[in-house]
Length: 417
Image: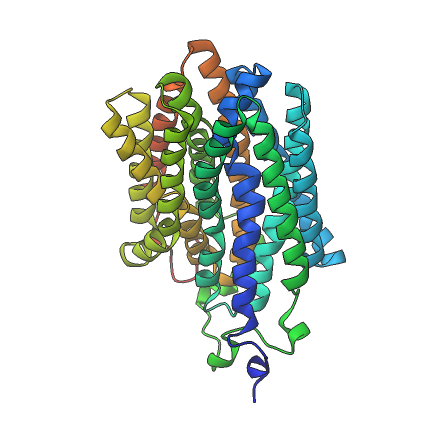
């Protein structure tokens, strides 16, 4: 009997880790980051926030996230991923509860920066647990199920937040922050009870390891670690990923505010739009990741950026409502697709053994895009009196991403370009 068979559960415990991971991502990224777009209209009105201040709040969250990404690996090594995830979720819950009592822009900014720290400190080790519990042959599939947690959170926030605001009134945003805080705290307790750092703690081996008779490593695995950072294609991928981070977060942060403040939609209707983004995003990673397997990473990235560019253009151009539905559809169906394609792309260019380091490097560059996008978009909206200019900027940068992607070369057999 193999170690992967000794379990009292009807399935391998790795799948329980996946389910828990989906819920953890729903808490740390979904509630911790993507619920903000739904909360901003009423919160901005109550605290009299300018467009620029709204952008700074979002940027503050990403600064905290990026700081945590840089620090959480050594911390997880010391105390364990499970422990770090639980502590991080507790930090998110506490900061959200305090935001519900905030009375000023500066207070919200500082507390939401702390929320970002918790988000990064929970997300990275959670994805790391997937690598421990699954053999490399099926890690991508497992990770694909975990990342859809953000989509579930978008659906929930799109329905819950307008409902609460409608019943509570102008201060409904405070109640919503507290509800989300309680939800994240509950998920922290669940994660503490269910997560395990290694399969050995459950007398198991990584799922899939017993099915692999002999490792089949591409020759690219022989590429040295030093060569990764001399790989020009890696920097090109980093620039492309930066543009994705810069543009997608503008839409995620400001689309609901645009619909409510500039297009005259009620929060409930805008919430329905946002919920549709969440639903469609559940298919984005698996669909376009699989499509890129067949048509190539280059073509896959160009197609995704084209759909995103159209989504931004349909909002920026102030077209009839039908185009807003198309915009939501295009954005949602590709929401989480670029990260899944990027994981596969870096593996092909540097080899699977160095893919984690390479992906970490371009993710740092991606994070810089997330930090920069909302603040500049908020300043543009402040100066022009509309978010149209910000969305037009996103259109131009998505087009630039398509152009840069066109320069990607086919990876050579040794993953050394």
